Length: 209
Image (cartoon, rainbow, N blue to C red; front, side, top):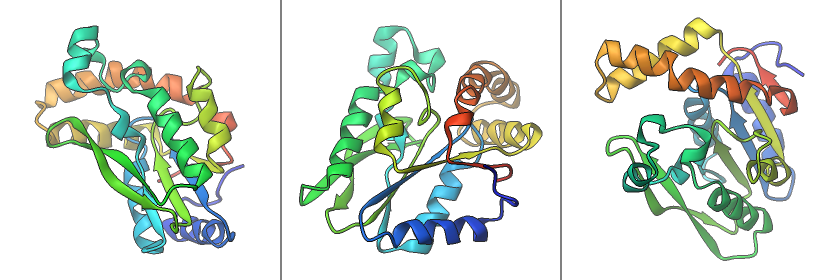
């Protein structure tokens, strides 16, 4: 189903309803690169603070040295450049809610590396937001994510908006305009096409974000 409008107010009301379920709820935000997942996740968590915490999938990026060793550096962001089993294991721990605190990793774009144990999720936290490209992917072990995340929204801005955002992001982190466009229309676009194939598995499609 689709949200009639992609306005953040509508989605915040939905998120508040999920957060008031009386149990820990995990909300996932997915979509192609540049679809606005991180921004929306941050807005939702800020609106529901202090009872919500953000745990991005990007914390499970493989380290640069590992990508170099595997020959995957040029494809960073592709589905096989993440520790998928680690992400699934973390979701299991968050879903179980039987530890005093779970420490999740985060990805820092200023150094292009993941940092371990950077995000504390205490047991009393009732609402967890996770976001990333491959939450609905059907390859194992990614397919397990759908069973561990209670609700998943797929963000789908228009292609011109998404591509413009992605080019701007790459430029912001040091790419030349030419390199930013090449990456956006190359490896990023291949990733986007993979993400789109699982769109139908989302609980909600947000046509603008």
